[in-house]
Image (cartoon, rainbow, N blue to C red; front, side, top):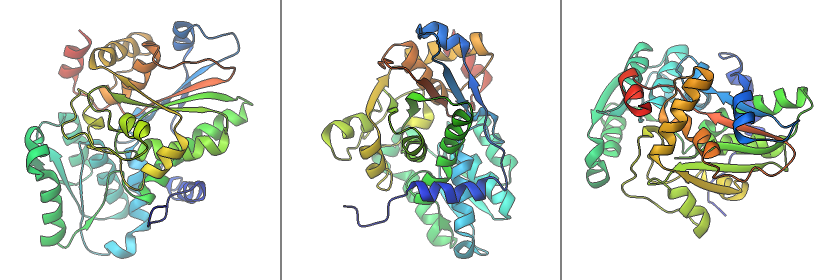
Length: 334
């Protein structure tokens, strides 16, 4: 048993009260195109939970807003510091904006421009590091730690925190509530995993609302620390994860995330970058959605038939974000 508390469905329900003060539910869109592509039996449906609709273009502000709300007394007039590949950066910047807190973010210098722009637009300060050598230098963690120590900042984790997990899980509650209102059942829930904040929160809500649903995690084939961990029964680390999915390159899943993922996720599958590019093109052609690689990887897993979709219920697939630079997007889909 872990020496710390593990987030539960009650934490997600509490987080919903915070999130609803600032954000409307994220759209859950029925994909007729995916139903046809996958050859599902009549009566089964595919739903895309599209977090590109949030003010920061990804799911990350859910966990960030809940974390900020739960730490206001501790923060007081101190700044908040965190590292992020870009989406948690803009999410935390948004949270700092709505609660009037100074935010300092450590981001890789090669992060997409749109992620820099979104983060800066909400008033956050940005410091950069070299991602290509970080697995050797540990510069990301060192810079974040120095900000916390030298500027008396409160440090936030982009995923390894119960408040972040619970906030993210509100998106899962939205899925459950909307589908139950339509008297739908879910046979498969497909979601990307990296540090585990998105999947852990959603898994809590989906397992509570649809106990029989198969919860499937998707990772890049060269950043598959969770798949290896699930097979081994313990957290394992990938020292040099590689993928165009810049939002899915954590070295390992968080300590707070692992017990939830281990107990609730039924299967982890991998997708290579070429399959992700094909899914980005497919989503653009079929739905007019320009998504970042990390957002398209779940659709890629379905299109590549890496998931056995046998069953009688609906399939829900999470599109985690759309923050991609136009030039990079065009290069990838061509």
